[in-house]
Image (cartoon, rainbow, N blue to C red; front, side, top):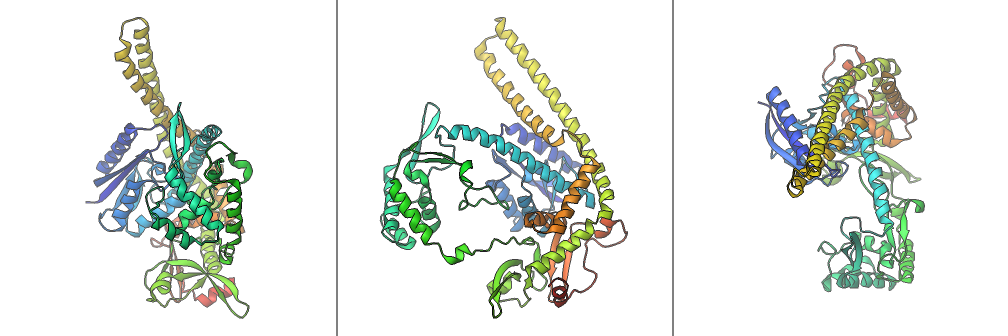
Length: 527
């Protein structure tokens, strides 16, 4: 019998345990119909799918990839329960696929055809759009609180504690920690390096805010934090890129909320300016020249000789020390156990993108769009039914609440007894309204064939232009299962049979290049 694990989560946007129960109920019913046994359930409460701060999700991935659990499927209720970020979704799906495990959203059964793969990427894009809209609404509210210099969650910086007064969380100085902060700034001004500062802090028994020994990264964050001058700062870190936040990159000044003198100062502005000047002058040349290349086949390119991953690297060669971007076998780089050759980044990536271009040939767009639209209509119909059910349930809750209010007004009920029940109904109604808002934002109107065709044409544009590497990576994540690099050939394996996509009939489960492609020939074609 086939086995599966189930994953459910509710985020912090007023969902609760009822949401988890409903998700598992739907998953259980689907598993019973398919004759599949669920051997374990994973739950994350009040977590967002846009971050990796989901301990039980990560535990599920580890349990599967480590071999502790042997399953055939991971069940979720809908795709946005797995991830609202296409990059993270692709990475974790890839990990599951490597171990023969398939992700199934029981409320959004996609099927196995090429139109299902493309529709899945469209739905993930819609979920990501919803998540970003919700994030913008949350940020707007947070900015209002930020203008009052309120602590907005998370761990305060070293040197500060947070107290609550009249419902507002304020920063206060933690004198013991502040001593460490002042020491760090003074030692930098005197010319000490990070290693010397770390040794001094450890000898004096200082710890980071979470009780660990200091490291170079923790020092960097302290030395760059303008809050120590008494300036409240919000919205400084740049948005995530490829699913990760880089705290070393900041937003434009007009996007940042800064309120001088809003919190207690630990160091002077003169010390702050002196340290900034020193740190800027210490930047190493290699950090200024660090590559910003995006390797679109990361996680997909593997060595045909040893099975290790092919990953990106930079290398200089030739009399003029020209810099090249390459894909190289990790076993060759790290363990010296493989002799498979490196391959130029632009050559391999252009070859794979050419194969995707064949799939998205304009000749196929209309037919693809029609097939995708038919599949979406089925999902849209199911969601409309759910919208109707939730709308009716909200109406029923309103009626029940009105009756309780009427009993209180007429003096026929004790408010101290009825009040808690009213609060419970109000919370249940709020949860349903949030669910309704989510569904309506995603399925307010059905996708038309023209809209889907336009989406596919945008993909075509990315394939023609090839300057937007993030767009190219999304394409490879959506359509390519694996790229296998042998000494004398490269195989591109799609997530579905190419013959299915092109309606040419026949074909095996994967697209394999119809000839051994000599790497020198590839160089000739693209070089």
